[in-house]
Image (cartoon, rainbow, N blue to C red):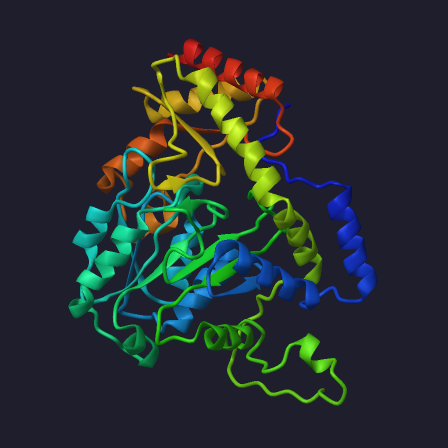
Length: 401
């Protein structure tokens, strides 16, 4: 069976994890702090906070900005549930908008139509690793600055809608030669087991707030908020005589550990010149093998402005129904090839349907979803296995259609 997306676990990672275990630091410590520093250097943003998940990062930033009851957050209908769930957690209202037909990313025109005086945050999603249209989005929030109603001092300081990018897929992607993480106000990465760069579980908040914000000051505040509201972490308390601490707020518990950071440090060290090179080769090979068949709509990985992180290979089958797509997937699995679908749109989920959302209100989202099949992409996937996957896909489409 060809798997869909197993993590890369080799001796180098195992040895670093063992070294972390033997160091005595298994919670947040020097490796986590070093990982934050290395991410900041790689992405070119101002400061980085590593946490136990991207979901925690998105939620803590909504809370930092003071988003709550009566507020609205604009996000794409085509995303994973985590993007919307965090909006629900803080008591705000998710405002779903449609996506582009070409690249699955949020439609800038639809964002503009959805902005109201209640809009506090826009949460774009870099689908599959291709960055959204950040220049246009950054300009959009400036254009609608007069409509923004600030409810607290942080919102007054920004003076406009916050852009909080769900960059879970796009670590290493670029827009006009700048890495994701440095493209807008705040970007949140995922290092979950299936991501390009995995720490088993984990995520990072890439702070890139404009003046007059002090990103280091915001980072310091978030460190407290994500560790029970405690004003010293375990590393600080190990200094001689520095045991006393205080709880300055009712914080949360979502810090990254040195064990997971140990994995991340190895993965980051070889990311640009190894991982991304391999994934780029794989998606290009898929496209080369599938391009001659007019039944397939191939994904976009590069434009004149953008380069993907090659996280997914979201193939679309032209002219099929959702039911036919599902039958094709079953035939592919019958050939011992694992595939997936990214994603079932959030408005199609039971929880959100009960709230009155309807996926059919987002025509492009539904059309993309109903025809999409994600093909395997992972570090150890061989050229021969890619040929096997392609053969299985073609055979399945031939059988069903």
